[in-house]
Image (tube, rainbow, N blue to C red):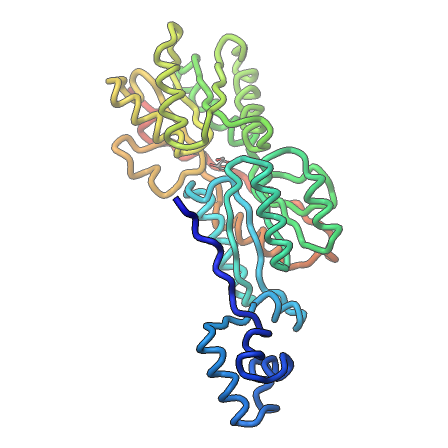
Length: 339
Ligand code: RIB
């Protein structure tokens, strides 16, 4: 199977050669048409149309010193949480005529680095990153090269990098305390890798809640590290948990997509929710309350998170780095109460 070679875009030089004028004349037609005679302008515009030439936005912005594009690297844009955060960023940027480019790292540091390099080559004003690892040296280096950096959805490990996060330790604590209050003392936490700060912090919160309730996490908690932080990952993990002799009486899921997969497996296996197993998700995305068994979830202020991150980025690298932390809220629904 042949893969399409990247289309070569016509350049300013191609247009100049085609219209038999200088590159400077083409630039004048594009940026200062009043300096060009009508006949020459018509000839250049005809060449632009024949070659399907599209002026390079970044190059023009670079020349004018008015970069108006921002890049964002999130973990997974298919997760409605990140889509909502991106919408918050976009709405804030649009107020200052900036545009947003979004990419998914899929929790892969190499993929994150490739997108950051692409954004830097594209000449973006700055980047917002949900880091795939705890190491932020590459982001400090990017900032040192003059690219604005804001950590998204996690607190900053260093004063130099601005950040906007939600208190995920508190979020994990709210979820686990709620389950303990429902009498669920065999809790499974379907979590992501601890290299992702949100996942590590949520576990800290779960352990704090169990400690406060006098329950030894070694006896009352099993943590499952998911292969993927989505519904498929939730299904696979839940099937494995149902096969255990010490079947859990509650599933706390690192996000609502994982919880969706868990609910799908529980229903398929005839397990009653919440009677046999209570389920709690995280993010409170748009579908959480609409499920056949409405999902209890830890709500994050997603749109506000994105707006605030864009605020910090537009403040520029000269401004002192701010560290914003929002508080989560537990939204209790049928998937964890009663039964
Ligand atoms: O997927 C990882 C999770 O971290 C997201 O669902 C959201 O909760 C983010 O904080």
